[in-house]
Length: 169
Image (cartoon, rainbow, N blue to C red; front, side):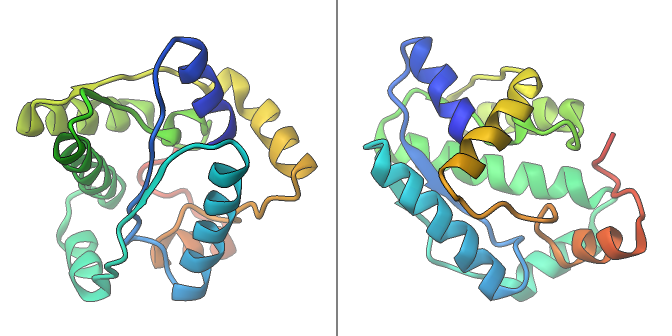
């Protein structure tokens, strides 16, 4: 979140963060990530919207039924973000996923454009991967929690088995 917010603010965007992550398993991992985000947003005076729902069964069912679970997850999360932006009267939305060299950028773009079509809110895509190392440095200096896997139970498994998730490049 660190460099993505900073870069978007440099471009003149007013940033509001949105936490919607029904994909993160287990619950304690979700809470650790939310606490890190809340602390960062507070320290930078970034408004934060939080979706408190945790539809575990629905999310796992969606991932199991998907042709590509990573794309399905991106689409779900970006659609929720676009919907929240529309609800708040925000004209644009983006994602911090684009800072990771481990995420499939084509999936992010495709999911963002699909969410844009459904919501009428403009998807702002930027390839922030060049700032990845800087984001690590900033988060370490701030002693922020850094997640060891993407989020879903499958990505956690893949981490331990050293498998490549379908959304990784």
